[in-house]
Image (cartoon, rainbow, N blue to C red; front, top):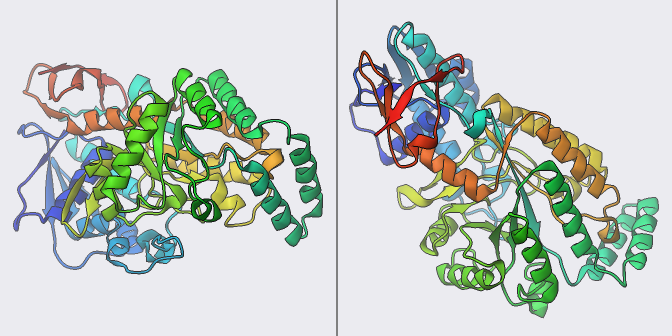
Length: 475
């Protein structure tokens, strides 16, 4: 357990956000009890660089019964996990997105590492060392004894107008002189003209996930297509169309979650979010709690404030479009910081860390086996911090739409992830569980079990530094 000594001067709101994030991800049990390791914030001055902080063991040191954390590290954590530089930047690409050049980790070439998670691990290890023979308890990382977690997600971008996308894909492959692949795609496309390859792909994904025992999260568009939205690749279908209903009903009936894929117009517009959320509910069979922006089009902080005002409890837009990695430095669920308002937005972020199209579209890597190798490399980094791997697989990645070999690659992806025994759940369930764990506080006396206080605490497990269960009761 960990007890914070009141710092002088008091923490700023951004420092408090950073400290809360570190303690939460460290799995240390916060307490006001005197029988606990004491956390002291020491030092002052400018925030260290990522490389500098890493070279100083993430600015954490263990003493007898005390962990000392360099206070300037909190500014670095706030900058990375709160996307402060991105929020201050006016730079944008043609979709209104903040370019990766404005991201603190991308600037430092450290986006492939969950550096905030690594800091949390260092804090936990220091607390274990400082505890010595004192009573010590950690919160278990995930349910059912699992040491890490995965969330498989699907963005439903294309449904009805698939032949047009196939033709564009063939032209792209021909332009890149990938003539053999272009010919294979053309053959698959013409063979599928009398069928519904997107439905077939969705049905196949659901069958593979059922066989693997995986419950996924599907993000669907809920606007009205126009020539303009179709041309821009934004809204290309209406959620009430029979083909879309068929896919969403199959996903819902198989126990998967359905979230909103916010259109370009939602961006920072609460009213559009409210309208699209309600519209999707009529098709999805219930209100959606999660959202991810189409094309990842959002302004950090501002878009999230509009999402929260529209009633969403979590977002999963934070992630890179043209590379894979940890945009917020975390492989976990984390509250969202608003630099403009100087406070935490009342909505959680479940950042995705891997996307198929980051490689196939933006890096022009056509071999699906390379995509999966990359996904599993990122997953290994998540496991190292007892973290969460959230990935995006698009249902339209099928031969008829230009991606031979992709369906088999998805099966390999699931096999590679499940090989390491993660907890697999929908994003909604993962966020809800993490909120419960984050809210737990503990207390203990010299004798008797540790007492946990917070709603849902009875579902949590305490463990010692070696991973063995620790007896506890709930208030």
